[in-house]
Image (tube, rainbow, N blue to C red; front, top):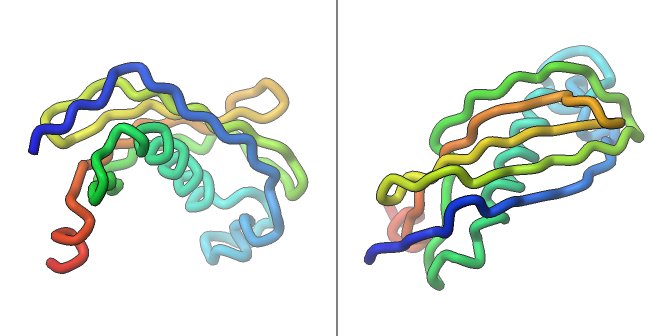
Length: 125
């Protein structure tokens, strides 16, 4: 089945950082600021959600490659915004660019690549 996703789809989410999002809570460090693994997860979530409605029933996308830069720390209670831009598609591979900001400043940026899969087949491998 050939699936085509329209180019330039935008994704967005505002998120308030919580204690469970810190490097300490996630085991990725020993500071009470936004953990890089949480930043990455939010970037994947926004990318995935932005194209979900364009996938046929029974299909989803899975993360396959991430290149991110965590540029600035963010404290508990801080509001961040995650914005994704769908750049291109090569068969089933999808390419996104994501920017994360807080108080008008870029705190993270990266490229997220996803792959379209049939859910049932993928889970039964």
